[in-house]
Image (tube, rainbow, N blue to C red; front, top):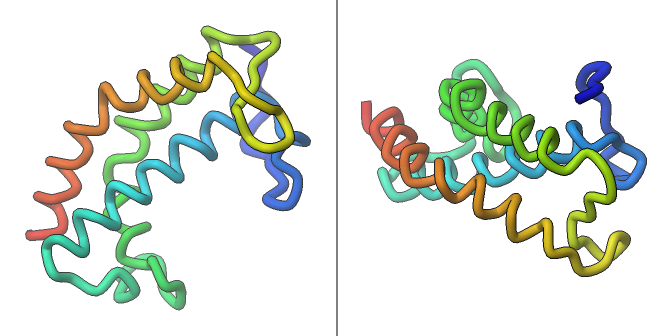
Length: 123
Protein backbone atom coordinates (compact mmCIF):
# COMPACT_ATOMS: atom_id res chain seq x y z
CA UNK A 1 0.00 0.00 0.00
CA UNK A 2 1.28 3.45 -0.91
CA UNK A 3 1.11 6.14 1.80
CA UNK A 4 2.90 9.45 1.79
CA UNK A 5 1.87 10.62 5.27
CA UNK A 6 -1.08 12.19 7.02
CA UNK A 7 -2.78 14.57 4.63
CA UNK A 8 -6.47 15.37 4.44
CA UNK A 9 -8.84 18.23 3.75
CA UNK A 10 -11.74 18.41 6.20
CA UNK A 11 -13.73 20.34 3.60
CA UNK A 12 -13.21 17.80 0.78
CA UNK A 13 -13.35 14.17 1.95
CA UNK A 14 -12.82 12.78 -1.54
CA UNK A 15 -9.58 14.69 -2.04
CA UNK A 16 -7.77 12.46 0.47
CA UNK A 17 -6.20 9.16 -0.42
CA UNK A 18 -7.61 5.89 0.90
CA UNK A 19 -5.31 5.46 3.92
CA UNK A 20 -6.05 9.00 5.10
CA UNK A 21 -9.80 8.52 4.73
CA UNK A 22 -9.56 5.24 6.67
CA UNK A 23 -7.54 6.95 9.41
CA UNK A 24 -10.04 9.81 9.62
CA UNK A 25 -13.04 7.46 9.80
CA UNK A 26 -11.42 5.17 12.38
CA UNK A 27 -10.28 8.10 14.53
CA UNK A 28 -13.77 9.62 14.45
CA UNK A 29 -15.18 6.30 15.65
CA UNK A 30 -12.59 6.14 18.44
CA UNK A 31 -13.51 9.66 19.55
CA UNK A 32 -17.18 8.65 19.72
CA UNK A 33 -16.46 5.56 21.82
CA UNK A 34 -14.10 7.54 24.05
CA UNK A 35 -16.58 10.38 24.53
CA UNK A 36 -19.25 7.88 25.59
CA UNK A 37 -16.83 6.35 28.11
CA UNK A 38 -15.81 9.76 29.48
CA UNK A 39 -19.45 10.84 29.86
CA UNK A 40 -20.47 7.48 31.38
CA UNK A 41 -17.71 7.88 33.96
CA UNK A 42 -19.07 11.32 34.84
CA UNK A 43 -16.15 13.40 33.60
CA UNK A 44 -16.23 16.64 31.62
CA UNK A 45 -15.09 16.01 28.06
CA UNK A 46 -13.73 19.55 27.69
CA UNK A 47 -11.28 19.49 30.61
CA UNK A 48 -8.14 18.17 28.95
CA UNK A 49 -4.57 18.02 30.12
CA UNK A 50 -2.63 17.68 26.89
CA UNK A 51 -5.28 19.00 24.51
CA UNK A 52 -6.86 22.22 25.70
CA UNK A 53 -9.39 24.76 24.54
CA UNK A 54 -11.64 22.31 22.66
CA UNK A 55 -15.05 20.93 23.63
CA UNK A 56 -13.58 17.40 23.54
CA UNK A 57 -10.08 18.03 24.91
CA UNK A 58 -10.22 15.26 27.54
CA UNK A 59 -11.69 12.87 24.96
CA UNK A 60 -8.69 13.52 22.72
CA UNK A 61 -6.31 12.99 25.67
CA UNK A 62 -7.81 9.58 26.49
CA UNK A 63 -8.20 8.53 22.85
CA UNK A 64 -4.55 9.29 22.11
CA UNK A 65 -3.52 6.72 24.70
CA UNK A 66 -5.12 3.94 22.63
CA UNK A 67 -5.18 5.29 19.08
CA UNK A 68 -1.94 3.77 17.83
CA UNK A 69 -2.56 0.30 19.22
CA UNK A 70 -6.20 0.09 18.15
CA UNK A 71 -7.63 2.15 15.30
CA UNK A 72 -4.48 2.99 13.36
CA UNK A 73 -3.64 -0.67 12.60
CA UNK A 74 -7.29 -1.35 11.69
CA UNK A 75 -7.39 1.68 9.37
CA UNK A 76 -4.29 0.53 7.52
CA UNK A 77 -5.59 -3.04 7.35
CA UNK A 78 -8.82 -1.84 5.76
CA UNK A 79 -6.94 0.45 3.37
CA UNK A 80 -4.62 -2.40 2.34
CA UNK A 81 -7.52 -4.80 1.74
CA UNK A 82 -9.36 -2.45 -0.66
CA UNK A 83 -6.72 -0.56 -2.64
CA UNK A 84 -8.93 0.16 -5.65
CA UNK A 85 -12.54 1.16 -6.01
CA UNK A 86 -13.17 1.79 -2.31
CA UNK A 87 -16.26 3.82 -1.66
CA UNK A 88 -17.06 5.02 1.82
CA UNK A 89 -20.82 5.34 1.43
CA UNK A 90 -20.90 9.10 2.00
CA UNK A 91 -23.13 11.33 -0.07
CA UNK A 92 -20.30 11.95 -2.55
CA UNK A 93 -19.32 8.31 -3.03
CA UNK A 94 -22.77 6.76 -2.83
CA UNK A 95 -23.74 3.40 -1.31
CA UNK A 96 -20.94 0.93 -0.87
CA UNK A 97 -20.73 -2.69 0.15
CA UNK A 98 -17.15 -2.18 1.35
CA UNK A 99 -18.39 0.20 4.05
CA UNK A 100 -19.81 -2.84 5.85
CA UNK A 101 -16.36 -4.45 5.79
CA UNK A 102 -14.80 -1.28 7.19
CA UNK A 103 -17.36 -1.07 9.97
CA UNK A 104 -16.93 -4.79 10.72
CA UNK A 105 -13.16 -4.49 10.99
CA UNK A 106 -13.51 -1.57 13.36
CA UNK A 107 -16.29 -3.21 15.39
CA UNK A 108 -14.06 -6.18 16.14
CA UNK A 109 -11.83 -3.89 18.21
CA UNK A 110 -14.47 -1.49 19.57
CA UNK A 111 -15.34 -3.66 22.59
CA UNK A 112 -11.71 -3.74 23.69
CA UNK A 113 -11.39 0.01 23.11
CA UNK A 114 -14.54 0.72 25.14
CA UNK A 115 -13.16 -1.24 28.09
CA UNK A 116 -9.73 0.43 27.86
CA UNK A 117 -11.21 3.92 27.44
CA UNK A 118 -13.56 3.35 30.38
CA UNK A 119 -10.69 2.22 32.59
CA UNK A 120 -8.54 5.20 31.58
CA UNK A 121 -11.37 7.66 32.20
CA UNK A 122 -11.94 6.33 35.71
CA UNK A 123 -8.27 6.41 36.78
